[in-house]
Every structure is written in structure tokens, then in C-alpha cells.
Length: 488
Image 1 (tube, one colour):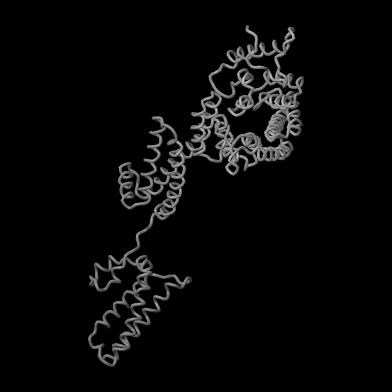
Image 2 (cartoon, one colour):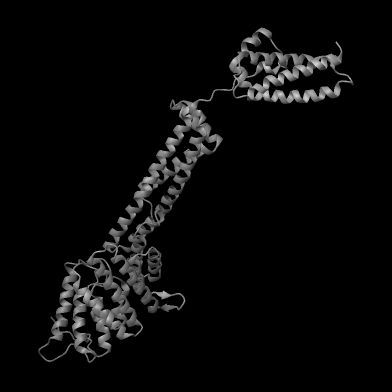
């Protein structure tokens, strides 16, 4: 057998090998058992021909190299579609009959492992687990940051440890090979089949996320309510802590910035209060605009280095516009009047600080008119009487001032240190000692002690102003003279 004849047979077998392999890609052709067996036999024949030493000489070497390269490409196609072979014939059976050497690798093709339908989508479950972990981590960090404000309770400490510990275990099991091995050992101990490991890990992560999300959603409301309770008791430091915790968990909680601003305003930290009111006002909160206008009357403007009542007046005028819009969109009469009173009062107060007494008088008179219509408690009630009494006193309108000062004593309920401090700043110390300060600081029983103090003060002042002995309780400016009250 010469080399040319062998080369011709090799070429023929290679072409035949290629024809059978082409059937792999023909969609309409049904690959059968005979095709599979013939491919293996043809490949055996090619192997034998290539193993013949007579094939190799100077005349055939170039052709052999070309054919060999083509055969290598065909072999790759066979390996790629080996499942078509193994589905048609049992190679184990034929190997036991022929005992082919290992060099005839085509007889050792392996059926690809059947992928369980549960395992097939493990990547989906793992991806979902990672997404859930990222959300859980975000909520957990917010909760821990909130709990870190002030002292942690024992329950809060253990809650944080449990959440962080659970998150660490799930994260390690999903993200690292070492973690996955540990998770597999644990799940095997729980008699959970391996094909369900990814699904179970996802369920655990979902349970952890649900618990953290639930904690996150209720904690903001919980701290908000606690802050309000502390504020009502006058425990301002505790109220601040609770509101700050709520703010860490949910910065967008409606009303939270306003509440925290009230705390800072009550503490006398007007710049901090203005900052909180300013944040809330960006959402169009009428409460925030009204409160911001009030605090700006006394807060220090960083650009001027002193109070800027003009800016306070501008903000209050903006509150008027917002109030008109809200009135058109469902707001009850009493609520509208409460806001209107505060806006008129704030503009009057700010105008008075600018010594624009005519403008201030107009706004304060309207504030008083509204105040007399209100039947529910409201912020800073009665203070408009005091501000207008001060203006009339300066203008030496004694009769009007006298009536307004009595109304001020009867009705004024300052809410902040700066409202209460207004009396002292203008020399009305005695009024300040008689005004109801129960809304400014805690520790006074509104219905007993404060009522007794007020009655004593007001009784003395009335006795002086209504004295039948011809002695007026007022000096020439209409101001009650301190230290001249009669003994009881």
C-alpha cells in the first residue's frame, strides 16, 4: 500500500466524517443511532490511516498537515455535540466489547450531567439573595446609626447584634466560597437537599430583610411619637434624641423636621431651629414657613451677624401665599385661622423690630381680631396683645396700652424662650413674672400652681389699675410701675 493510496483513503474518510458532523446542525434532520455509530467507526478509520507510517514521505507531508488541521477542527465539533452521540448509543457497552485504547478518545465521550431544574436556576436565586442583602444592609446601617444616638438599651443592643450577625452570615454564604461551604454544611445538617440550598438561602435572606424592613418602618414612627411625648412634658433633651433617631432612620418622615425645629426653638437654639424649618419648608409646609418666619425674627443671620427681621417678614409673606393655596385644597376654618393668626402676628412682630410701627399695628390688630375668633389652643396665643401694647406704650397711647396689657396678661401663652424673653428685653420684667410660662418650660402644673400665680399677679395689677384712691398703676407711658403693687 503506497502513500498516495493511503492519502486518498484518508481524504475520503475525512470528507465522510465531515458529512456526518454536518448533520448536527441540520434542524430538520433527525440524528439516529446509526449516524452516531458510523461517526465513531469513521473516526477509527481515520485514526488507523494516520497511524500508518507509509503515509509520511516528502510527497504527502504537506497534504497530511492540511488534512490533520481540518480533522482537528472536525474533532472539536464532535466534542461540542457529544451529547448527540451519547444519547443514541451506550458507549460503556461498546467499550467493554472493543476495549479501545485511551488514545481513541471518541469512545470515551461522556454524557453531560443532567442539570436538575432546581439547580439550573441557582444563579437567579443567588442574584436575588445579593440584591436582598444590599437592601437589608442599607436599612440595618440606618437603624444602627439611629440607635447609636444616645445610650443604647439592652433590647436595642441585642436587636442590633442579631440583625448584623444574621446579615453577616447570609452575606458570607452568598459572596464567598468559604462561606458557601459553611452554609452547605449547615443546610445539610438540617437535612435540606443540596438542590434546594440556593432557594433556602434566598428565603432566609428574605426573612431577615422583612424583619429589618419592618423594624425600620416602625422605628421612625416609634421615635417620632416618643419625641412628641417628651416635648409635651418639656423634656427637651430627650425629645431631641428621639427626633434625631427618627431622622436617621427616615429623613423624609413628614412633620419630623418641624418637630425637631420646635425642640430647638424651645431650647433657644434658633439657628438650628431655622435650619430644620428651612428643610421642611422646601416641601411647601405651611407650618415650616410660619415657624421659620418666627425664628428668623431673633435668630442670627450669618451674613449680617445679627437678627434680620426683614428676612423674617419675607418668609412670613411667602407663608401667606402658601396658605391661600392650601385653603383651596381642603383645610378647615379653625386651622386656617390658626395659621393666619401666626402669620399676622409674626409680620407685626418683625415690623415692630424694624421700628415700622404703623405697619406693625395693622398686622397686630388683624392678629388680635383672629385670635378672638379662635376657640382652640394655638401656638403663641395672646402674644399679639403684648406686641401691640408695647407699640401703644411707645406712642404714649395710655388708654389703649392699658387695655392691651391686661389682655396680654390674661391671654398670652409664649411658646419659646425668645417669646418669653421679649418681655425682659424691653423692660417688662413684671409682666414676664405673671405671664403663663407653662408652654416654655416644664415643671408647672398648668391647672393648679400656674393658675394660682397668675391669679395673684393679675389681681394685684387690676387692683392697681382700677384703684379708687386715684393712684394709677401706670406711669406716663402706660407701663405698670414695678415694685408699687399693694400687699395682699
